[in-house]
Amino acid sequence: MRLLEKAGLVGLGLVAGVAVSLHFAAVADKDTLATPLPIEELRAFSEVFGRIKSDYVEPVTDKKLITEAINGMLNGLDPHSAYLDSESFKELQVGTQGEFGGLGIEVGMEDGLVKVISPIEDTPAFNAGIKSGDLVIKLDDTLVKGLTLNDAVKRMRGKPGSKIVLTIIRKDEPKPLMFTLARAVIKVQSIKSKLAEPGYGFVRITQFQEHTGENLATALENMIKQNQGPLKGLVLDLRNDPGGLLTGAVGVSAAFLAKNALVVYTEGRTEDAKMRLTASPENYLRGNGKTDYLKTLPDSIKSVPLVVLVNGGSASASEIVAGALQDHKRAVIMGTQTFGKGSVQTVLPLGNNTAIKLTTARYYTPGGRSIQAKGIVPDILVEDPSTAGQDNAFRLREADLNKHLINDKQSDDKPDNISKTAPAQSTKGDAAKTAPAEFGAKNDYQLNQALNLLKGMQILHGK
Image 1 (cartoon, helix red, strand yellow):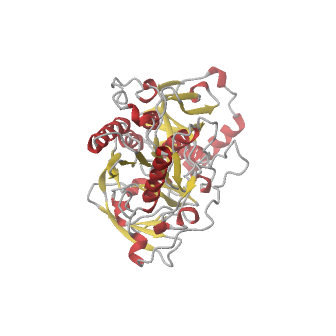
Image 2: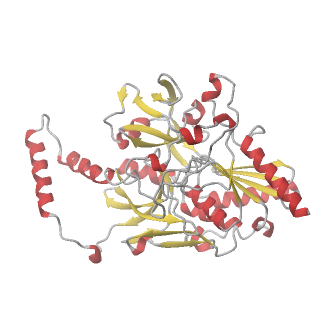
């Protein structure tokens, strides 16, 4: 197998699916992996194929039967392996550039239903109040039960401006909820930043995209200029960030780590699946001709006190960044336990603009921890009072998905039950149940706790 681009991404199923890490690669024969074909099983397949062609109640095309057979093979492996038809393949490639059509939700399939991983910030789904853990049971008048994830995602796509009704079951609601959403061209703003207070910066990464690293560098330089000097502390917000391009994750990590520090490594059965990515330009630029956008950052960024905010919606590339900064003791990780997406999918083009997305490796933090089905456990547990208890009780995680890969470093891959008590529940009534969280606002409880910690660190440093 010849890798065309060893750049991973944490996309979401079929632009609206579960957080995954990807490589783009070309298919080639590997003599070393050649094995005899299972003649008896292939004979059975041929017989079933023939019976369907001759006896099924309605005529079925060869193309449909073979496509569904491929889907069945891949869907039976794990939640992230899948067949990408030409439309899905194109959506996947376009989505990495931060613009794609749809509703703005990451979804997975659970027990035959579509389950929401997380709504993407500033999208129709997010603004309507769709929440992590919601079960979609109907799309307009079509029951989801019986549809494949591909079929469900295709029904959620459509012409921008057209509407679709989602019927949802929510664990804390007594009856199904109905949401009417207008489809839109989703343009995800990767970096949002501001001076939270004089001397203290706030950077939110909503998704790791092609230009996330350089946009981060620009945001940091602008905040330092606005502050008229080096920052006293910085909050890096990765909450509800489902992931994105691995090069973006390496670039963000490299902004704060020493040059050539290990960011992440992967292990799989083939040599192509084994990588060690460090905080060096060749790993976050990946030969795309760009100049090193981190070269002009002031040295103070390498040592500024740093708090990273995470929650159950922080997945894959977000977990790579949090894990790298935690292992190198460069930042304090605050919030709640992350999603636990620690496997790598390789996109293998098949011709005719189709491809398969195949799980080929697990990734590990610099200290050798596997994040798969476990996630990153924060150094300081801080729950958001507006969602108290929900982040652990109701949020879907990798370990909840059927056929998920186990964590090869631990016998128990279930998320830690690290929250025994929670802040007081919000008492704003039914409206509070569907209002989207506004990260970075003045009443952002977790952000305020991060700022308090940074101020305390500044006092200790002064002494």
